[in-house]
Image (cartoon, rainbow, N blue to C red):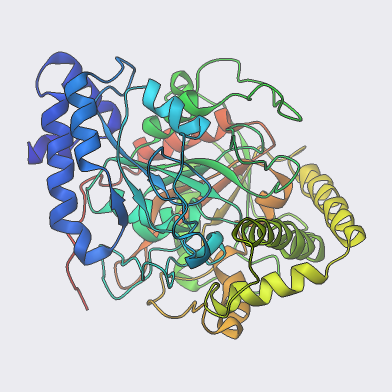
Amino acid sequence: MRDLFDNNDMTGLAAAIETGEVSAAEVVEFSLQRMQERNPAINAVIADRAEEARTEVAAGVPAGPLHGVPFVIKDLHMNVAGMASTNGSRLFADVVAGADSELVQRYRRAGLVIVGKTNSPEFGLNASTEPTLFGPTRNPRRLTHSVGGSSGGSAAAVAAGIVPGGQASDGGGSIRIPSSACGLVGLKPSRGRVPAHPEKNLLAAPMSVNHAVTRSVRDTALLLDIGAGAVPGDPYVIAPPAKRYVDVVGTDPGRLRIGIATVLPSGVPVHPDCAAATREVAGTLAGLGHEMVDRAPDFPFEQIISGLQYLMAVPVAVEINARLTALGRPLRDDDLEPMTRVIYERANQNSAGEYVEALRDLERAATTLGGYFTDHDLLLTPTLGTVVPPLGLLDTNDPASIWEHGMTFSGMTSPFNVTGQPAISLPLGTDSSGMPIGIQLVAAFGREDLLLQVAAQLEQARPWTTTPIEPAVTD
């Protein structure tokens, strides 16, 4: 079972279950055993549903494309009926979901078996998963180091082989950053591609989108097929793809014009190891026949900062105020982490006019960056501006450390939350110490298909290991 579980992605496991090589019950039981063995070292899964998962498998899960495959859900604005929905915050620690979110329902219909919820920084506001509520998630490759954030719990669970895939969300890089830190595939879809229902985000919190972290491009494509599609009443609906995403994997995208950027929007060069890895991948793409152009977009830095400052902070403040109203009490000193408290207090001072101006900046940034993609098919960058850091560098108890270091991590990812464009991180490099370096590809709005085609080309040309990492201290 160990070899079968560790040497297959989600698609491969589902095929083994379908042919009768192994049963869904055996696969789920192995996942639960692996969780018990490995999770204590990394603190990725903060709540399990072992007995519920066993009961569901015994009763028979739907015969969907991922029938019987174990999966985890991020504990941030994504509900699993009967489980806590804490958002990584002490203020929400006792909130229990009464029903599944729409995306969780879609995953269940596809045959996935939810085995637990995973750690997230408070409200997803940190690029490292180190909440006060549950404690830090540790990188399976080096337990002294970060897994990134905010989908760090899901990424660590996949990297450690507890599950072959996990739900994730991305408001400034929160799928791509942990994918880079843990050596995984992480696609941020276009705004509106995957629903957040019953959460309201298309107008109320437009920076964040939902999807997953996986070990393979085909799994990422299949999960996008499963999760994509508007909910009736959504304020706008993105055009559906011409064909299933899983069907474009392995197809020829033709000769593309791909730009290269190794300087952050702030003007600061990325870490030399990250730049070197990006140049290596550029060489691979050139060898595949693509035209590589050493030209970065003209990043509208001030508009990007405006979008991040208001369009991430104000929705969090609204959520906190609603919770306090429901509790019938004022905010207490121990309700929020120091950084969240600073963000909350600043957001409560913002005017409606400032929020609307931030929305205008979002549109201005999308126009500016969108123009780059009229004569470039894709943009190639390192996912992170630096190598994987040790735990504690991004410390929410020290807001100054977040302001100092945060944009180094999210500088290459957050612009495309502002614009709503799709972007994918692929595990294509390593730094001088052997830790993973993710390489990001960005496409024009709505072109996830193109990203998946090129990602599959790179997966074939530069295959990465999908073997899970057993947690061990390597320093």
